[in-house]
Image 1 (cartoon, helix red, strand yellow):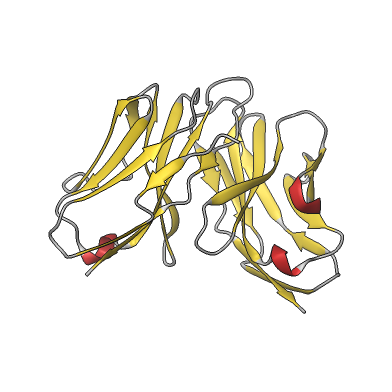
Image 2: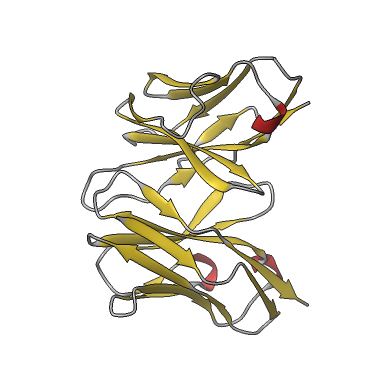
Length: 113
Length: 116
């Protein structure tokens, strides 16, 4: 079985400071992991994906995430927050070839000017 | 860039009316998902199709919801009769699933449904 836990429902950072959004996963099989971003009134947009290649994954808009099997974590980071990063972020896990995608409950990121 | 297209973007209807939402998945994707998003429940999986065949619709209220894929370029989600509690944003997503590894899901921009 797979599941994902996003440890913070809300994160607030100042513009220009680092962003850390935390995600822990549970998976009986080799997982594929994804981070999505959702801006208001928009669909979910893929930020980055991990599919058993490099453990440090770089995505769009300066985001990256590190797959840590020993900690069952896939935290999302960005060195310097921008106002346009304010959005909802979802961590998603699926088995390598599984049918189901399991979504976290989302983390709302606020960026303070 | 290939995109998932959903129509309409917004729909306001009265209770009891039929609502049809449409989705054009990305060409070549073999799996189409329907999700519903509300503030209270977050993202809920309603149904999904593989190669146009329904694989799981256990997330849908069976008495009023139906989902179909009449062809590879069109998926539909119908609600009849609609109720105020159906008000939500409905998302379609497609992906190449069951390969090694699974592709990510690609989402449409959603249909915002308001039932009065």
